Image 1 (cartoon, rainbow, N blue to C red):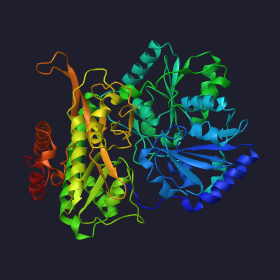
Image 2 (image 1 turned 120 degrees about the horizontal axis):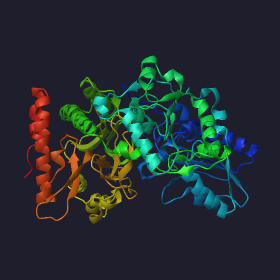
Image 3 (image 1 turned 30 degrees about the horizontal axis):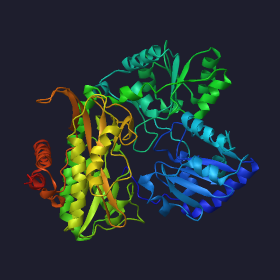
Image 4 (image 1 turned 45 degrees about the vertical axis):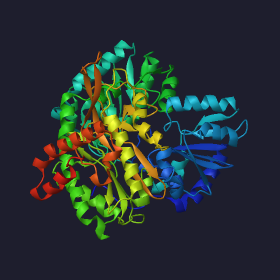
Length: 606
């Protein structure tokens, strides 16, 4: 199994741990301390050795920050976790607040008094984050103080897990479509154009993309924890634990990069600073510590985007074709799972954990699964309203009759990363369930069928998905979609479909399309496909070429939850065309016993 179902929350221990942290803060003359969910690479998903927020509070979500002060403490989470967090943390200790409605800076200025010092670990916060926070706190008379040795690491002690050390391996050129040498030259040309002398890369997925390598340091995300310095002239240096680089990979990397140890990075940065080099850091992803290292060498960094981020997001032809292949393969596994689920869901013997295990089994049987792309969200009934619910052996529910079951899952294959969500009826759905499902389906179709000019951003299209929900007085508290990597992170920037999406969509980008509706205490509905931005094309009778989306995911929607009367004729036409394509591409790849189910599931809706 690629996933476990143990309860990971440290709720019972959080009281003593907070008290110990407060004692350490008092010793360092700090009135407050920031505990983010991050590491020195600003990863979304962390190795166990970096889960400081979970260790302190019990909260296991992928985004959030706790602030501990000598007066009160708070945990800040976004809308995805506002239901989950209060169940995992001691709310007598931590007030759970939702961002962006609640702002950590405002909470600090209201809680502390002028002259108080707030500590932070400079390895765990980005340059831009600390810059904004410093400005706000200074205006209120508060001081933000870097703490080089994180007190939580000291308190965690010998129980802290050891850092990961998985060997790296090559991503074949057949899958990447572009060699490492060509990518390095592309990055160097971008630096020359911006008159920068070098860039420090801190994001593992950028580094793995650049050198065409993959790793195993983070669960479900095939990356290696490392850093890299790319100069405009000469060879880049990959700073990585030598134990992660076997002799075959050392030989493969030798033609285009030097290999250094992580502990040598600071000296390399100081040498660049002392030489007066313009060293580029991405203020949104590089930690504050690296800016301080350069300043110690006598120069300030220059700000600029990670030069790997955009070219990584624009998939090569090989990566696009690989994504299509991966989704056909994944579609077979999902169809087999949904056919099986229809047979057994109402028996009362299937729970959330057993369903997740069964789905992983179908993906394994493809013979090409390298990992799942994230812990499966298998949510029955009211658990579906918890956006990022993860079933455990303690929390698992049996699939009830006349309920909804939401399953959000994905696979990691050498040729692509998948992410798909379906909500299905167990037994007979209520009229209300069908109505809400229909609204979410309309939202999904609105994005899938959108045509838009060059220069369109995620924030421009996000209202397309929300429109059907807004018209019904509903909404959802997460983005409509995120970028997706190619056998890399299932959540990839810079593109996204949300109110905060400010990056232009370009052909070759892959995003998710996942509007939802969540009725607390009852059920959740989310419908997710991955979509590929297509090149601009003429529209009959039009005057400008328009981009669009190609849907990659090939999995039927549950016809039992669809009321044709809710859909406009063009929406029904889209749905019927999609189902016809699913049947056409998946039926030849599945066993004969599953074909009747697929034919019924993809039958036209009148």
